Image 1 (tube, each protein chain N blue to C red):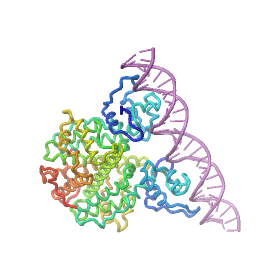
Image 2: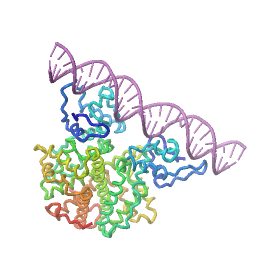
Image 3: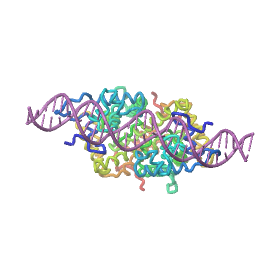
Image 4: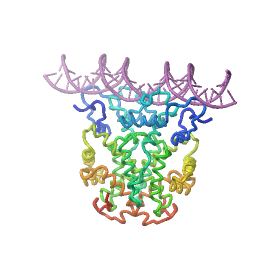
Length: 264
Length: 264
DNA sequence: CTAGAACTGTGTAAGGTGTAGACAGAAATG
DNA sequence: CATTTCTGTCTACACCTTACACAGTTCTAG
């Protein structure tokens, strides 16, 4: 009963069982010839080689040596397979090299996540279907929260840090990947692309409608022939971390109610 | 010469011309019977009704009363059409109701963006193909930067604020939308879903592998029967803004070099 | 030991998708 | 007028996900 997903939509509970590999294997019929890991692994390999657009049920099936429809005995839909791929692509965090202070640990976290996703750019193409639920993604969550254990931040604020930092990383990597993706077409690398964007903005801001943007452009913030992608990343990240430092030095411990809400 | 995109990949310059409607209409042949706005508008209407998955070239063509292939006289590919939809969906910012202080203005910005994207949830399904380039999106950029004009932040830091805040908003809305999307399947609303997530985390953290996460869960941070989605959003947002406040009170004006980099 | 249930992998097919290529006709230019 | 350029259409291709029925295999209940 209720082992198979209903018709139409996706079943979150079922996906959870797949993510955690906690589905009772069923003792009745013949044992399946495949493992979920084989399937997801094959899909990941294809994505590594051809991107997420190259992943089709046919190719995955071919890779593991079964028919297309056989996959549906293991995975309810392709979207679920994509979620499983994201989870596998994330992998477990390796905190052994992280420093001791929270600032350095969060920094390491962000850099590690960046490294992982830059290495597997297809991950940003997978539409997120919900909050982190798989063991790997949850382990990363734990790693961040544990890094904040010794800070005077409230639990709510720790969650806030997690959301802000992970959101920042995701967006930054997403931008970065889209740039390096456009590069082969324009035949330019990261820095040159920044210059191209700069030139385009210069043309656009050549009228009085965009004074602030014009100022920013003229300051050369986009013409970053002076910085690498990782440096830009670190700059934005430290901006957040410095903000947190300043914040809790100022705010100190306290619950959610301690927030200085300035009305609505 | 060079008016049509080459074969295969997408041409950023061509997309730019489409976004800004700066393509010389061509004086030779018969005038086209359609406007780009008609096409993109029709696509947006479909997306509003059926989501981005419901948008197909065929349906858009049918809606504007031409054949499928006619659309390709106006748009080089579907992906470009999606980018155009995103730009149109964004719309121009309305800053008339924004307060005077930067804190309030950024808050208004974030709330406005959230409102727009919640109203058009399909926007988060459009994979971003690059940095903001269309007139509407650039106008939002300008609005943020202008809000920071009177602060002592450096130009680099203003860009930092822009990246961090917009990234946060995007991620928050993305999460929010994915939750309300899963809701119809599970038959629960926002708050109940938070409870479900909480329960799932409780089960997961019922072992000593996740001490920090367990603490967070037990604090009830996810069991937000006390808060609405917008309140959660504001909490995280103010976390950032308070950080900025504390930061520049502490750091003051200064260029990028003033950053306290703690080495690598 | 046997009947039946449960489960697997497969073949077929339906109903969609984006878009390449060739073509007839219309509009403006020389 | 002849020519060039642009438009909309038609046909066709390759490919996608997945619903469904079916034969074969394995275990369990009686």
